[in-house]
Image (cartoon, rainbow, N blue to C red; front, side, top):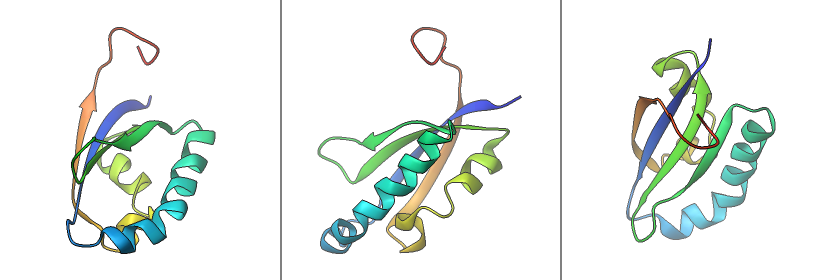
Length: 94
């Protein structure tokens, strides 16, 4: 049975222009995962170089593997990914 994982992305801070060029591919990648039902939500934290990606996976390693082909990851724009199993008890994801 799959679980829900919140994966926090910490982006490098000196590549904003390069990231802007890759962002459409990054969003298309996330969109495909969402269409498949494996990505539940994604977006940046306002005013930071961080983002949150919420996915369905069997385990922590699976959550990271699911996101390995993210164009931002492939281009080296993500300095750290922190996966945490999340247990929503109220709301549409509960």
